[in-house]
Amino acid sequence: MDPAATTPSEHVASRFPVPALEALPEDLRARVNEVAEKLGFVPNVFLVLGHRPAELRAFIAYHDALMESEVGLTRAEREMIVVATSSANRCLYCTVSHGAFLRIRSKRPELGDQLAANYREAETTPAQRTMLDYAMKLAETPWLVDDSDFERLRAAGYSQDAIWDIGAITALFAMSNRLASHTGMGPNRPFYGLAR
Image (cartoon, rainbow, N blue to C red; front, top):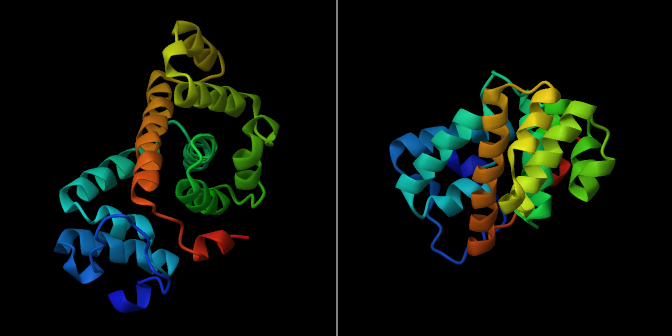
């Protein structure tokens, strides 16, 4: 794919230098082009975090290990955690972009908006509500996490591996949310209309 065809037309905002797609190492360019093929544009996160290629590479590896897994949580449930906790962290980039991914993965266009506004009122299953209660507690008041939280998650049917993923996804996106705020990165405009 021609990288120029996937580069967003709007200016990619960042408080740090934003490399051109062509300036990224070959392995990162290939990964970005793979995503751009599916979406039709280059998500800003790749270019903004491309300021530090080694860190972008590590971020992508951990993201993919957590978010693309077929074991335990569904891919939609993984996105539910991201949207709810990113909204709590006031991260516009992740709330909007992962709201789009949630619409795609859940095939429910309303769910991302519900979770972003108030996850407690979103149309979720009782088990998903327990999952989100824990993710939000870990995101907002991590010092209050205790064994009773794990008992509730197990009672809701979550395995030890799924519980790990709930916490790890919450933690990874806490970092991602802070990097978006730190850099001043905003969402690509096409995210707003995806899967509407």
